[in-house]
Image 1 (tube, rainbow, N blue to C red):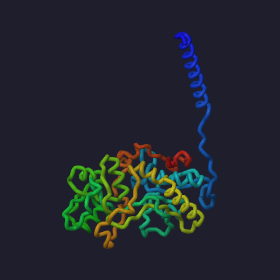
Image 2: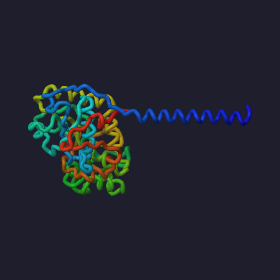
Image 3: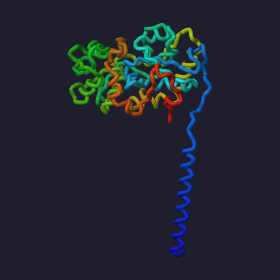
Image 4: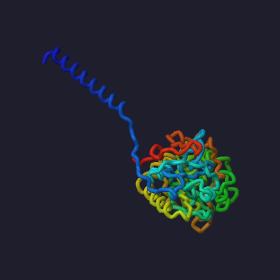
Length: 329
């Protein structure tokens, strides 16, 4: 084969490749992705607004929910989007503050998220947990020993939180270093000022991950609980639909994806050891809305920069669940 012939063949090949590339580009610009349209699984009056699931969250409880600009973001927003998508509904997020039962009773929302499964507050129905939690002890080594009241260990916890109360109750007042925020507590742990941080397991994982601190949960100071969905007890059809949706999200990998996105990994507390106080039945609730995470904290701790789903508040109307839902890969 002569050089001139080889050059001619090469020109033909390059020319064909360019034509093919142009044709493919043309095809891609002429088509638009259309999300799958699903048949709604629940109808009015099971939900108040046809085709829309109105979900209540508490934006004072980052990372479950918080504000980033004029957007509501958080774990519960992603969970709400996934539930709405599984039910074939559009999504509307409503900030119910610290009164989820009031919002359910006055019809402002169809369901509420971020409800502590172990809480005795409220007369509404609670689903199975979609996210485990409990007051946890974090350490820099995953092999750290579970502390006892006689070891003289030092703990950091946010001031006035139930985690701080749990530390003082089990280990004594002098064992506690109070901090203004969970982020400060983990900074003290990372620098070696304390050996442990006490925090709600979800909040602690969120702040440790956002601060790039490789802290591990080594014990729980209470029996593990979890966050669940609340529905009016009288709404039997919606209770059934939500129970099935939560079960599906827990089993099909969607919740693992959401947890990894916000917490840096899957949250599994089933095999975590208990402190002596937890084992003996000492009771303490998970950190309440006094966890101190402001809207700015929710955005700056790093999770919202990891592609956090954002949803307009109800003043902006309902959004498509298909564009918000987090899919398992």
